[in-house]
Image (cartoon, rainbow, N blue to C red; front, side, top):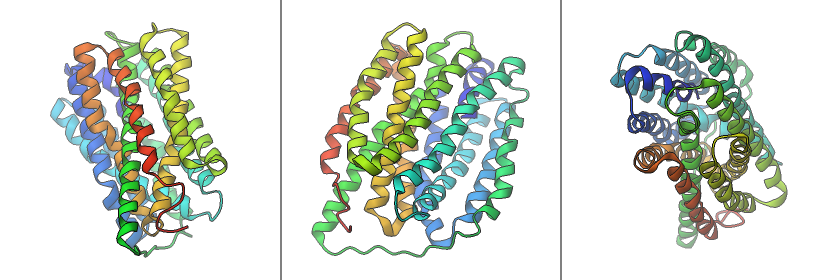
Length: 361
């Protein structure tokens, strides 16, 4: 989130176009997503406690260096390494949240993601205030809370034990069904992750073109992320009652008109309404999507979590490139409409996702 808030100022200082901002976000998203399955597997085999703490500390130090970059090359290198640190943490946290409870797993995993989303919600307000008062000069100090968390985390996770699990598959039919279900879930994660990532990156540039207005785009991002956080928590809780597929399908269908409204109307108070609704709907399907994958591969919890989160986060890698270049050619409103249209593919993918785990109960 802090790199996102810095992009308008870095673009002005370094002379970066929308396309180059898309490239920078591509590097961050690629680095943070492609490493997640590997680190999820390592967490399964070696334990999650110190891996989680170490990656948070590394991420904080690297992000603190971003305001100091003097060129696009330096920015890309820092984003790549920091992205790996971010990607290494998420499979650990998602798996721990699931494994900590036998019942109401949706609520448990949703609570974990709520903590992260609340941080994303507060960050634009705090970063916007710092940027408005002093530009990039003091942005590095905002990583101090992450360093403190990294110091305390190993003590808070002392009860988490090493997990050694191996998959068990019974027949070729089950392998085929499982493969189709996993592929469908990854399509869902890709499409929805693209919408989240591109709105997260390009909202500031859409509502505040030209001279950056950190108060305006910071407040708009905060509304988007606050409702996304509420949606992610509510979606997990409601999934325990109404089902995972229903939450994903209904929220994706409703995203189509809300993104369209945000893209087509002039920036004003209705923009807050539409972007808040969009954030809530994207969030409402996020936790159920993760839970669908965890339910399919319970004996590879860390790796499965890493795969689905990797695709969700990695969707921004190619998606932000598309959004950035479409925005340059036709305008960001057209690029945002594209995010609405592709939600149809989520609805199509749901037919291959079973209501129950095909390899188990």
